[in-house]
Image (cartoon, rainbow, N blue to C red):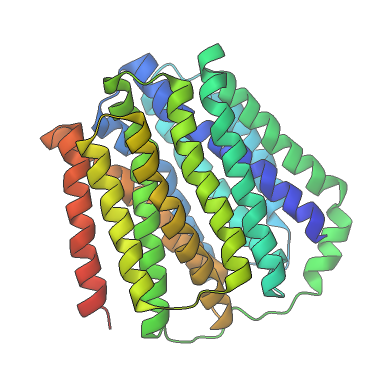
Length: 359
C-alpha cells in the first residue's frame, strides 16, 4: 500500500504545483492582477486549507479511512473548472474549495506512512519530486496555452484518484489496522513550538515567493518558462535536502535554526534588491535548504510527541496563506521590490520573537 501511496502523493503534488505557478501567471496575463490581488489569491486557498485542517484535527473525525482518494477526485474536478472563470472573484471561490479538499488529502495520506521514519522519508521524497515535476512543466504549458496547466493538473489529480479507487478495498483494510496514536492530549513543549514555528516561517516565505515573485519577474521581463525554472531549482534543492537529511539525521539545533531564518531573510531581501535571473535563482534556492530541514523536523516531532499530523499541516497552511497576503500587501504599499526587502526584515523580527518570547 505504501508504494501506491508514494505514487498518489507524487501525482497530486504534481497537480498542485503545475497549477500553483500558473495561478499568478494567469491572473497577471488575463486580469493584470496587482500584487495585492496575487496575495489575496494565495490567501484564499491556503486559509481554507489551514482552517479545515485544524477543524478536522479538533474534530478527530474518522481517521481510519482513506479520505485522500475522494479528495483527489474533488481536486481534479475543481482544477477543470478553473479555466471557465470570467473574473478572478470566481477563482477565489474555487481556491477556497480547493483548500478544503487538500485539508483532507495530506493529513489522510500522511497517516499511511506514520509507522516508521523510513516511510516518512520516502513520502517526503515522493511529494517533493511531484512538486519539482509540476513546477517545471507549468511555465512551458502556460506558454503553449494559458489554461493548459489547469487541464493537466486536473488530469494528474484524476490519476491519483484512479490509483486510490482501484485499490480502495485494500486501503480500507490497511487503515483499519493502523493504531490510534495521534490523539493524546499533550501540551506542546518549547522544542515542538519552536520547530513548528520555524516550519511556519519557511512556508510563509515559500508562499510569498510562489504567488508574488511571478509579478516581480514579469515586471523585469522574465518569460514564464524562466520563472518556472527558477522556482523549480528551489524545489529541486529541497528534494535533495530531504534525501541528505534522511542520511545524516540532523536534529533540533539552535545554530541551524539561526541559519534557517538567515536563509529566509536573505531570500526575500536579495529578491527585492537584484534584477538578475542567476542571483534570483541562487538566493531563492536557499529556501529549499531551510524548508526541507524545518518540514522534516516538524513532522517527525509531531508524530514522536503523539500529536496528529493535522497540526503539522495547519502550521504549513498558516504560512502559505499569510506569506502571499503579507508580501502582497507590503508590495502594494511600498512597491514590489521594496515589498520583498521589507518582508526580509520582517523575518528578522520573527526570529527574535521565537528566540526570546516563545515559551
